[in-house]
Image 1 (cartoon, one colour):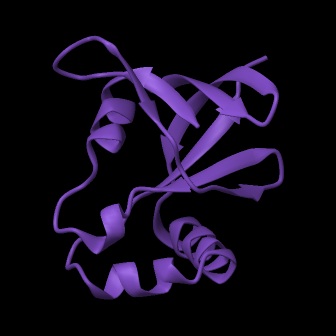
Image 2 (tube, rainbow, N blue to C red; image 1 turned 180 degrees about the horizontal axis):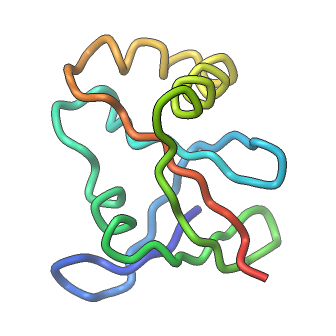
Length: 106
């Protein structure tokens, strides 16, 4: 679960998301089921990259960054292997679905 700040409203927003891990990093994918536009939570992260992550009984701050190039492709493939519906999502859209990394802030 990711908590961020809305771009337009400035209000806190909650987004329950499927995730995978890449080492200590949490990987989330802005697929919106293959919709033609990025989800609102992704646009919020671009504007306000520091978020609160709720994972099980743990809550912590993280900084979001967008994976690019080969790293994005590798992470998307791993994510889709763990969550097979994501394999179809990229086929449904012409946009490159963003892959977001959440790094814990000490």
